[in-house]
Image 1 (cartoon, rainbow, N blue to C red):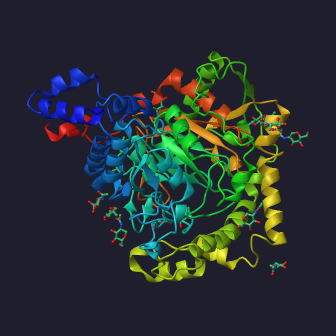
Image 2: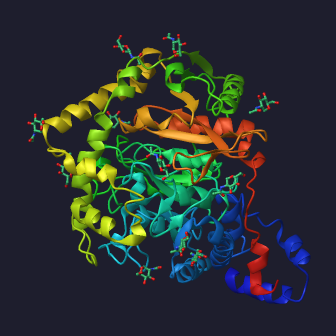
Image 3: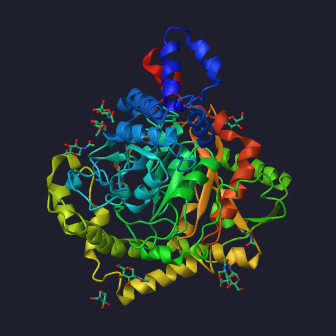
Length: 546
Ligand SMILES: *[C@@H]1O[C@H](CO)[C@@H](O)[C@H](O)[C@H]1NC(C)=O
Ligand SMILES: *[C@@H]1O[C@H](CO)[C@@H](O)[C@H](O)[C@H]1NC(C)=O
Ligand SMILES: *[C@@H]1O[C@H](CO)[C@@H](O)[C@H](O)[C@H]1NC(C)=O
Ligand SMILES: *[C@@H]1O[C@H](CO)[C@@H](O)[C@H](O)[C@H]1NC(C)=O
Ligand SMILES: *[C@@H]1O[C@H](CO)[C@@H](O)[C@H](O)[C@H]1NC(C)=O
Ligand SMILES: *[C@@H]1O[C@H](CO)[C@@H](O)[C@H](O)[C@H]1NC(C)=O
Ligand SMILES: *[C@@H]1O[C@H](CO)[C@@H](O)[C@H](O)[C@H]1NC(C)=O
Ligand SMILES: *[C@@H]1O[C@H](CO)[C@@H](O)[C@H](O)[C@H]1NC(C)=O
Ligand SMILES: *[C@@H]1O[C@H](CO)[C@@H](O)[C@H](O)[C@H]1NC(C)=O
Ligand SMILES: *[C@@H]1O[C@H](CO)[C@@H](O)[C@H](O)[C@H]1NC(C)=O
Ligand SMILES: CC(=O)N[C@H]1CO[C@H](CO)[C@@H](O)[C@@H]1O
């Protein structure tokens, strides 16, 4: 008798006994708010529950909170079928690895070759079809993950209007964070952040150009890995910039994020930036990098000028940051103070990044659109997207403008012109010798550490990696402050924040180790609780008898 049939039999017997008997017979079922890859894989291996049960439980959890938080825009209608097949595979003795049978949500700019739409939150791309899965989605499937649905985002990955609300898209509505009513979920991977945080899947994928994984991870009590540009393929991901875009995991623990990274990283014929991956054809073992003693003997820099001055909203974060430095010291690290970025002032005044993103976007969007096999609104270039957006009322133009596109379209050069290369070289200097790479070299550092509110920028312009891990949350006496648009609560009691480890290109293995060593000594995530969370647990779906 297969484990699967055995479980079904036992379940039907238990339908007449109490849920307590079920739980005691099978041991503790993991609590889905915090369930880890290891716990879920163990439960699947032992036949305590199936992948179908997980899909059912996570789907119910999504439906419980979606009407308030709008974090998932579409469910995958094939998810149960895929889970059934993966359960059958397991019953037949084949396990693809740690992610086998585990549901994952992906940001709604990562295309899949199935029933789901890939819109970047715009009606312009509703109904459009791609020729195959985005490479990262294909890799997830190969690793046995169930793609459960698409998560909401700041429309066009926050690259459309000048005064946006994080997490708003025309197609997905306004995503809210779960730690305070009306919480700014941050962006642009807003739905991925809220979903992972509330245990609506084992983890999610986000994308980042400058901050879009790190920021929503830190504001939703998560670990986020912003990978080196080229470590994960961007093929069939709706782009902003080939020089800065990257795909990475957003998860509840460092180890879970490492599992997901292991599955999605690696070379891809469809994205030639992946040919720069240096590890001689194999990848580091990012999961094995999760070692408690990773910080021992390491030199960690603190770039004080980059971290910036104290302000009322920053005060609680900076206090927690100082305490964190003591944790790092106790874990055996040498903290090197004032590893300042020499070109920081020039970086603050530079327009180079804007130029690079604008020029890339015009070219890279056109390249994405040219690959569509179905394109219902005939969107072939940025000009078409702008015309559609400005004339289709749900896109809320002009209340939400197209200022970033207007500027991109006004450039009189492309990303192969000399003007582009001048801007790009400026970025490589500001983030390189004058920025984080200079500091790493000049002070012989293994990484730098900063509060996560500031970490993304200097690494973004050179395509370097950052890992954020929970650090704390705003105290009860925090004054509520809104975002610039006035429609979201950006600072409020209970809203989480994170700490970031940033390093040289391809240094994820080391950064993951440092983040893990910090996480295991502090366990901040479990101390910070959402004000709103779904109630459905595995016990509620097992055997359908509770
Ligand atoms: C999310 O909530 C909205 C509004 O209640 C609903 O229309 C939509 O179907 C829900 N989506 C999912 C995936 O449950
Ligand atoms: C994709 O969008 C089309 C057009 O609105 C819709 O009919 C379809 O149900 C969507 N797919 C999913 C999986 O929601
Ligand atoms: C933001 O917080 C204030 C104060 O608690 C609350 O009145 C308001 O409704 C919240 N905003 C949203 C959009 O929920
Ligand atoms: C990468 O591919 C793009 C588009 O196919 C091409 O323009 C570019 O020259 C290639 N770069 C390298 C380094 O091969
Ligand atoms: C890769 O292989 C080359 C040649 O075999 C060797 O010199 C180099 O040290 C290897 N690099 C790594 C990172 O293993
Ligand atoms: C580094 O920056 C901080 C904050 O701006 C400043 O107080 C400090 O003097 C600087 N140190 C060095 C060595 O430049
Ligand atoms: C773009 O405009 C600048 C200044 O207005 C000019 O110097 C440059 O030659 C123009 N480049 C192209 C490709 O037309
Ligand atoms: C590192 O040292 C070089 C050479 O002295 C200098 O040009 C550069 O500005 C320094 N960078 C940083 C971030 O310290
Ligand atoms: C909140 O309380 C802390 C500790 O009691 C205090 O240091 C801080 O100034 C207070 N903040 C505000 C905004 O009242
Ligand atoms: C942003 O939008 C809000 C609401 O429409 C408006 O009050 C505010 O002035 C705008 N800010 C900027 C910088 O445009
Ligand atoms: C596709 C989907 O579920 N979209 C929902 C997202 O949230 C908005 C509200 O902001 C709903 O109206 C949509 O139905």
